[in-house]
Image (cartoon, rainbow, N blue to C red; front, side):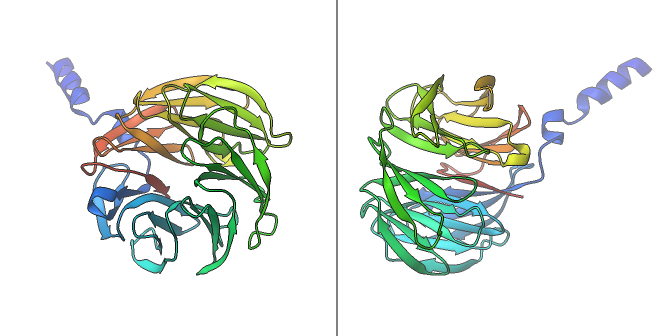
Length: 312
């Protein structure tokens, strides 16, 4: 009888995967409702919800700040990620899409694909340069001296921008992505750039120095997205295939696949912070959370979600 009670007690305990869920918050865009959610990663509970200018697609969080890009409204909302209280709304864009904080955290870059521009925001827009129509996903080098921009969601060209003077970026030239590039990210050591595609089920690793591909890895059905963790926690490259409902984890130094985890269909965008990764599903609004090499939760937070940004 005692043995039976022990077994029942063990079975009644919470699943270890949920007990080990990380103590993070996540910012999640719900463009169909023009809202931004603040979600507790461990419980999946929506703590706050804030209205945003029309069509909030992408969100970025870094160094105690967050930025939400509303494409239809042509606006970028800069806010406090812990309260969702807007600090300012920057307008004057044609069709803004992606925001990226500089590695130092004191300025923000935004791509405007309709005008082919890259905007620099320091409280307000302080500079715009033309980099090529379709300017979309971008990747900063860890030393903040270089920025790669895919010119379109199906990009035939990648713009290379000198950002050694962050307030005065300068277009250096373009490189051939050898396919229709979709997303890209620098490795934590700054020596390589991983480029994913919209027209093929693999990614290419480019040398940041020579601008030439040095490796090819299978990445699942396109389009894929790729992100790395910071240098201290940077063992893995995380690659999503929303159409396959998978998250691939690569040992980026060895370029070796370590794990394939199941996400929710439509989970394209991914955010990574200190060993935690989260994806948001455009299909059914499910946020999937990975800690270490395990999936720890998968919960619906809205009818459909576009992007996610982890906040410690």
